[in-house]
Image (cartoon, rainbow, N blue to C red; front, side):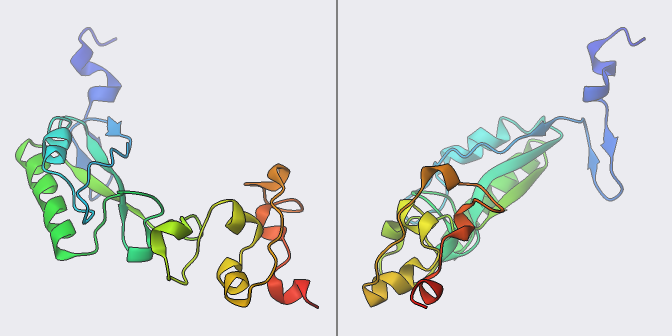
Length: 172
């Protein structure tokens, strides 16, 4: 039986083939929303991530990979040169502190706020969208909206938000 805490399995190195980690501690992603208006990351994030470099692997907060995939507010992104440069500084700071970091790439798909993307025809979320997967078409045609039933939100199968009638079928 190990007599020191450094011999604990959690603190032992982990080799997973091509990846080697100094310990088995994986820092779970925690979205901090420390972004500038252009969705690049504020310099304080360099310190935040570098301070946690002793973890076996840091998994970053969500990082949007497409302009229409952010999903909410001031979420960081990997889209423009400025955004990518801000993340390169974070990676450099983590590596300088002896750590490893992986980005949690994100695209919210249907789960996004229409008001954040006025004029965009991409997917949206919010109460209107959950009951109307074809919300942009309904808005464009001035068609009525399905009423959201809260008992179906986030369900699947026979009673889930994907089961609301689409406009093309509602008119038939």
